[in-house]
Length: 230
Image (cartoon, rainbow, N blue to C red; front, side, top):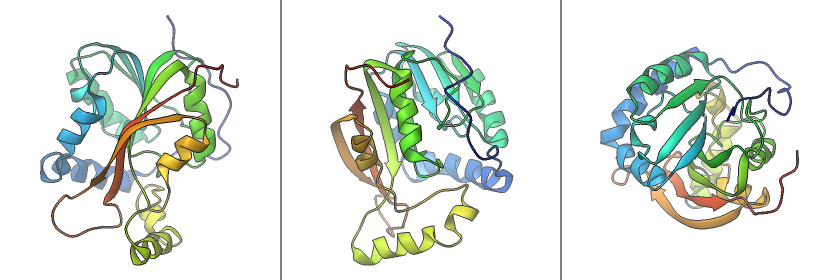
């Protein structure tokens, strides 16, 4: 079964290119596997998956080593060239077949209803158009297919949410690959028509100072059985 296609349309703006962010993100993310417990989070995020999986915003491919053996194939979308190069290396070391391809969340280069699951891992903070991206997720999932998500977003008290919003309006997105701190990923999934399943709040780091990036949600959602818009 051929899963790739020309996608459902073109993204209005140019390609993603954040070489400086990609360089320091790659270094920080590797350290976070043990220092922040991200390896354990990835295990919980991907446990029990099977069949064909689409991962959107694969970054440097740190999820690849945690996919269970029941996964038949992973198609990993990564728009940033430097991170995609690192992901290609990680794919060669993975225990399941991983195909790393360029593409944007708002115009996925894959066929409709081709996947059993979609993985969203720290990506909704940085996509340019969240509703459009989640519409694409619905399009490519089979009816009843699941979304596994681990996303950071708005959290804490009033002072923290004001801080997150202030950072979003200033240099934070510019310095961090388009990342936004005050988005609400679970609400966005619900508004896109997904059925929200079990989820839990995760604070990273679990110990130490609470940061604007600390408030995370880990869970699962499902695409309803009715046909998705094409």
